Image (cartoon, rainbow, N blue to C red):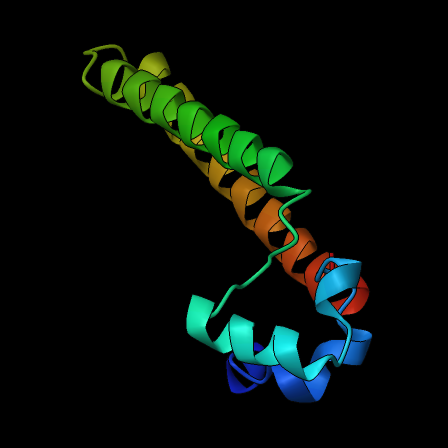
Length: 111
């Protein structure tokens, strides 16, 4: 949907909330000047910080769990090997559950 409307500013100008008000007008001189200026795209990036930091937190947590898993799994004690497998299974389950919940939230609420 998004890619099919890129470049169709003339058709969709009246209901594009992200364009400044002066760009929504249908003045022909503005249209001619705009064509010579090139295509200007506006994007709503209000939630990007949340997504970037959530992804970074997810990555750091995964890295820590993998390091702990390999340290504990390389140990000679049977208890450490069992605990490392348990830690890996728990974190993997949590990771899948978070991914499923986020996918459902995005599909239902268009977050």
